[in-house]
Image (tube, rainbow, N blue to C red; front, side):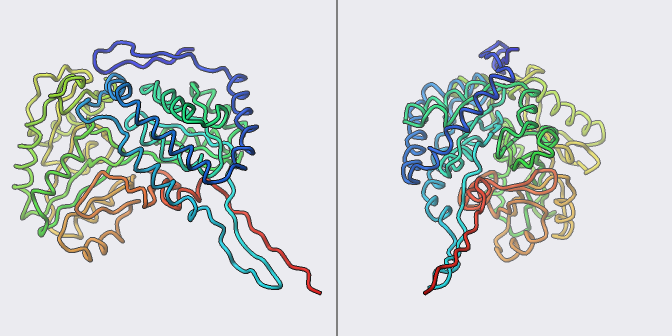
Length: 458
């Protein structure tokens, strides 16, 4: 079997790789397991230095990586690659490693020494998505390696070359081959490896259906899981918000990367006193986008990563309009009915419409008028997902009070669509379980081991 990356730019086959057979894959994982003890035995500062060096080497590959991303998943080259975010996230985790992995000292007296240490799980499987293929992968790869695990990386077919590039960079920086491996696997082989209990922890970022398949495959093996799945992230603009800033940030959060962001804004609730002004400015902003070939510097909105993703967004939009929604953006000239999709702003939407209920993961956003915090809170929580929520107000106490009642993993005030590596990246409901980055991210990639040592007294 061969995996093929079909480029959204022109529908051509950009890259293809043969998959590993089950026995080959199991042997590769076994070699990673054999290398893990020696890797964990290295001083923490050595592992940190090697991870920093691998990230730096990856940054040096930007001339190669940036156009490859455009070819593989459509992000315009004008935005560069993902090295800024990769460096920020990996760098922060390296900075806090000593503190996050330090033993918890309970007692060291004449009678007892009691403490809790952190130990690596062993072999960690990272299954990464295509939308931010480097940044989502580094969320788990960097702390897993720093903590003393070995890592097997399986990347999405749409970004077939990303795993190769990451592993090459780390290997050239001095990370041993068996410590960080890239694999090409089909779904069945991946499930078989999980079902056989060959991994000690698996981190998956992707769809709800994919997360269910991972849980099903690992059932009964007691493999630790981290799952970041779907989202339908809301924004709420209160009557005291900075209107211009809210429009700029929320619409960018809805449309950047053609709407293909894990924590992208997919529904917006605006207080009735600001609603008309918000919609007017939002429409003006989106009409100024340039949809086109992502290899051209003038392009601000590239194609969606695959025609089937664009088809789902078109279907949600068409259904909403048929049910009474108002579409404000005319079809762009470059919209080809395939991967190149016009952005869209919808009003007169309701939660009966799929576009306000199902994950869209594309450049469409519905905007609803609300009259109170209570109404906005009810609507924000009316979702099977819970990744982030973006609140716009001049009152931090009000935002924190509302945030306590929002069913979500992260509460933003006056910003959106950002992953702070110092804070736990987590979700609730169908968005998944576990948490990446921050000190908690290190805790999820290790296990606690308790020591209760009674001293001999004379």
